[in-house]
Image 1 (cartoon, rainbow, N blue to C red):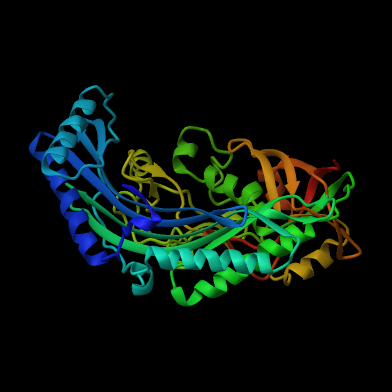
Image 2: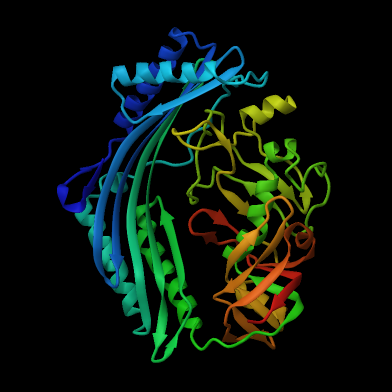
Length: 467
């Protein structure tokens, strides 16, 4: 269901009631499948409510309310897998979904690893629904959005905002399986995003964007102010852009660029399925050094300040902190149920996805541990001379690690100080090789768009080509 903001939809959110309803639906769906002949069945449901307020060209464009429930059913019969989903939750729709999943299974290829996992005890959920976010109304969300935009524009008259948004997300998810898994949890958060540039007469700086989210309404005002400050500092710094210099050597990466170029490819390569299918550069490297000793990376779904925080994965397995890299050494791969069956080990609780497809495999909330080399300014000083990249726009081959792209919101550093912004500058290299050449990490790991924690990093051996 979708409605405009004036329709008065979504008058509060009762997490307990939503959890009871959704858990009953997935349990009924599971029972239908077993009754119709499934050897094993797993049902997953999600209920989502969103209030989104969008601004364009400094004015309110759209206030939108969306709500809906989806349930998906995975069945196994004689080693064959079937799947079906629906956004209708009446009894007949649930019976039809079970029949459709079993029909699909009849046309599938048998696989001996097509089996469900046994349930394991779950910890208490890391996130709680705050009553203030559960009760936030459409008019309140509109007011927060207007104030967010007003404060951003008041920061400096040169700031031009193309798009801004403020949104409130409230959701419930549940899983039930014939092997005994039963899990349900709710979440509520608010998020704000700015997109635009700075204009000073004839000088038009490059665009940038920034956003963040919170679950604690007491942190809302500070989050909005921090997002405005980060955005303003970046777009104002983009004015007066000049050319960089071509060289091969050290580059300072801000957390978003470090995540895009180095962290994301490593996490993708740490997928057990990628390893099993020989699509990972990390195959055969467990227990070996794959990065500089300063690098430690974990997936931490217990970090309640990150958007992916959760108590269980798509299959109802406990979601707990998993060390992936410890002091440069590869410690673990990520497993969902299927990958665990293939390797004869336990799932690490990394089944991913929603109700519209079978479980995938991926992280929840990646955290790169900070180093000990000081704050951003200390790393600028340590770089001495060269490129400081804040955002990356390009491609990274997840299998080989080769990357090439444009340094966005980039700066030139001279004598340990930022001296000018840069026109688009190309960078290239190989992420897996260059992880060994991380020479400095900041002493803090800030959130990146509310989803990841990562430090500033100096990486040597980058190929830089001036535009």
